[in-house]
Figure 1 (tube, rainbow, N blue to C red):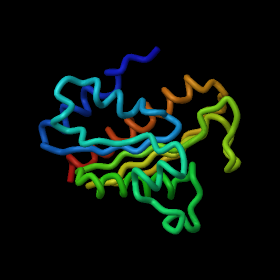
Figure 2: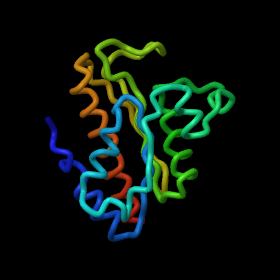
Figure 3: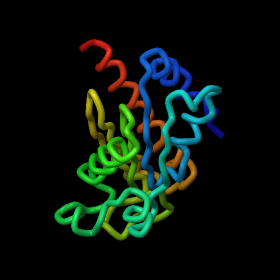
Figure 4: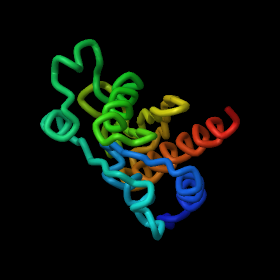
Length: 164
């Protein structure tokens, strides 16, 4: 089992020092991204909220992203990850939006992605998106890898924003 603080202590320190905040939307990581950010004492200074948007119903109900908003965009894709990150950032008034969407396994998803596929995105002063393919059907291991990938991309964006 991965330590909840492994990827987030430095992120928390940067966010607190700058007075910045983050909102999180995740699907196949199942809340692990949020859990890791919240595991740091004092998380209320930077974590404004988020959700596990695992279904179309939760996507629309919690994020307000309708089927019309999804026209030309499929779930578990980089454009969808970007939409999630930007939408949660805007809806919750955060400095940063962080999103993850994929297929944890043990099988692929209905969109044609193999198990171990995820797309992660950051929206904010620096925005980035990335895709990870673990080529592994281990659901639990993938969920931890997906959350680490999202947090790693977030740290990269935080570091880049410090330089500008």
